[in-house]
Image (tube, rainbow, N blue to C red):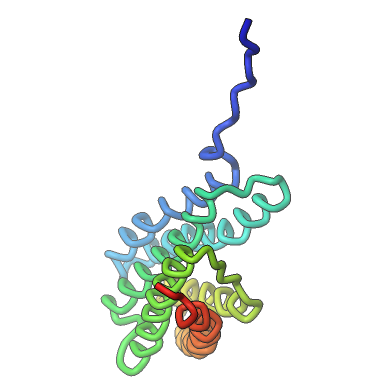
Length: 199
C-alpha cells in the first residue's frame, strides 16, 4: 500500500510574493494616472499608489526573511518589479516635463545602470555567482524612491509644500550619483568573474 504524501504548498501565493505581485500591478496603474499630469486628483492618486508600491518593496523582503517565505520566484520577480516601476515612472515624468533639460541626464544614468546591472546579474547567474546588494545600493534605492515619490506628486505636492519639485530633482541627482558609484562597484565585483570565465 502506497503511503500518501502530504501535498506541498505552492510557493507562488505566499504573502511575500503577493506583495511583489501588487507592486507589478501598481506599475500600469501609476502610469495610467500620470497620463493626466495637470489633474491634481490624478497626481495625488498616483502618489498614493506609488507610496503603497514602495512600501511593498521593503515589506516583501522582510516577510520573506521573517516567515521563511523566500522562493526562486520571489527572487526573480522582486528586482523585475523594482526596475519596471522606476523605469516606467522616469519615462512618464520625462514625458510630462517634470524631469526636463539637464536633469534628464540623471534619469538616463539611472536607467543605464539598471540595464547594466541586470545584464551583469544574468551573465553571472550562468556562472552560479551571486551579486549581493551592498548597503550603499540600499541607500541608493531609498533616495531614488523618495525622489520619485516627490516628483510623482509634482504640482500637487508643490501646492502644499513650495519647493518640493526642486527638492525632488536634487534627490534625483543624488540618486544618480549613488547609482554611478554602485554601478561601478557591481561592475568591478563582477568583472573578475567574467575575466576568469574559461568559456
